[in-house]
Length: 393
Image 1: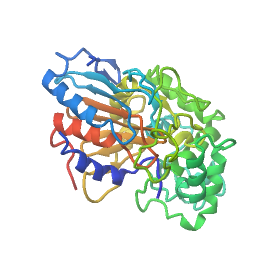
Image 2: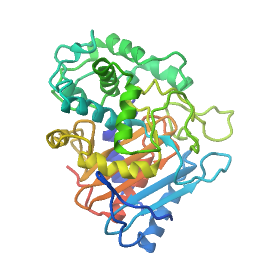
Image 3: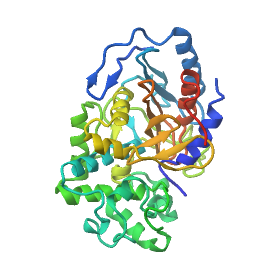
């Protein structure tokens, strides 16, 4: 099945990447900037991180950005390679598509509505979106936790062929995804039986947001972003990205969207329609904003304490390899809490290690929506700095 993020594949990639052997930033907290670390990252460790990042510039990746915030080890923010195939230097403040990390912001908006009493996590989906297979059984909580059993619309071969041919998909709306979900009614599973990653569940949550609030899903997400104080994070209205931005490329080993044999170099897919991923993956940000956000996400910033606790009631996404679990719009990867993402052209890992109050964020500018090329680099850095933090089942 084709997904904008595959946690099972992520676990396997981490096991492979773990064997792979700047600019100072300030650590962040849910309440605001914390005191500066005692020192920047140790120069020897920084050099080893640099080596890992330089080695990641392959397979269509022209550039990467790494952000580390640790109150003990220090902090590090560094860009590598180029922002495009023309040789423009990559910079730490570059904008990119955060892909499925967007789901965490969608979940935040829904959970805040629950805190306000405007919906209940036990509400049935058909109260807000009609004619979804098993919609009279699926709850809002099921959707948040990837337990709704909803067919993942990006697995539809017709959709995939169209999107691979033209990521701009003129005229597309979330209701097109809804029609695909309805057309695959016989492939819907029973809710609350298993945790199975589905982009459709977060598209449906976007429609729930619109029905409850009377506002667009983009407006709801933007309110969350503003409340969290993430100035370089946005939900775009067009295919363009804010300046400065990294060009995005399809990874050269992709089977989903192979490059044109006549083209010189990897396929450029920078421009894509944000209405396709919608509330499952449309948001744009920078690594410095995501370093700040990683801690906010892991500590439940902006939520009532009980809601924050419920958000991290985990269910397993994998049964072998690195331990991968899902909460309510948040992923637990080993001992790390956060999310990762992959959309045409961009791949990222945004995670916080609560026991160490540390965050590690990685972005690379190549992906095909299924592979997560940022995984190996992130896994190598985490294994270097925090050995033992990626336990297996």
